Image (cartoon, rainbow, N blue to C red; front, side, top):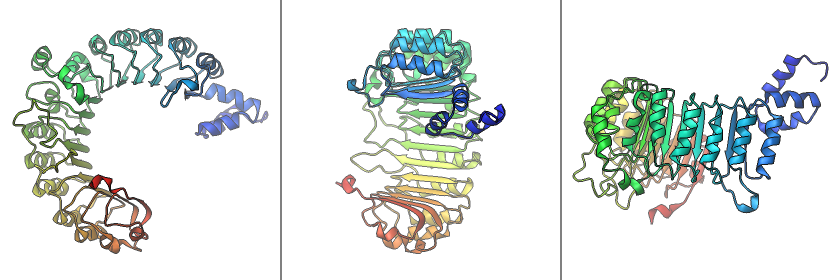
Length: 467
């Protein structure tokens, strides 16, 4: 090893991707150990690192060029030793000058003081916080004031982040490109207007409201007025995911849907108040749309304060079919509930979308309007590679047998479908047309009936959902 050129040694280690393999190789000789220490740029640790602060100091000394660190205490119990605390973040900020990407998950001992230490990490550009209950908006503000290159910020279940001055400060910096806020109880849709000029930089936005605490932010008149008066420049937005949000005319995120000319992926999950005009405006503006995911609330799952809700109709699907010629992935589902959801989308609207777009991935969940006639139409979907049918009770063996005529289909998933049996799979037996067949909780299909229907099969039978 001593005779190998330096560049060759580095190349050898570069080809070893698994952390366990790198650890083993670094123990084989001193030279490889030294090179690995210099080359290692990412580190993930959590439970079992005890005592945490002392162990982190040793790791930082061993790997001086760390740029990405993930600290996670999922599943932590007190018997596993004390968690990393604010002092640990002080060690990280002082001994990792190249740190650019940091994830803190289930770090329940970290407070705003720890975030103040991180504010000295001038190169930090990505921060992900997942369930850090002691953090508040003050701590996040102190961090964004110091880390002026922050382009990725994820806040998930940070329950005590109430003040949002940090959003306004980030808006002025105009560096943010990826923002995720999920189940932070005190942050509502209206608060996003505080991003101001940063809207023009954002490429990816995920916003999820905890429905159990929606009442805290429903009636924010000041935020509504700001949305109506301020232009939201979101032309660079490429991915948009909204969960449990309220969409109403001239308010909040309704102002965004019709302005995203570069949008490629959109996910609307249980968003109350979405109208045909919202989807039509989106389709007319977002002609580069490649992925559409809609989970529509049923009448039984709507909040009590929504009277006479407007429902999406085929007009939305036809507008997408007419304007979004690049749409490759379509997922349509209805909320699960005690009563079945009756689709506001008919087969005509669904077929218009399938026949006009180069769909590669198609998924339906509780879409009862999709039946054997729809399966017949899929025979002409020349790009379809993946099909998922969940609780589509109008599909029978006759429709399932048509799968052999889908020219490019490689993956088929069936879940909780009552109308299909082993007979529907007989045409596939021995053909190995499919690369993967997955059947879950379909009462009339057995594992034995799947053998030979695909190169890879998976089967699960749990019928508790029926009772």
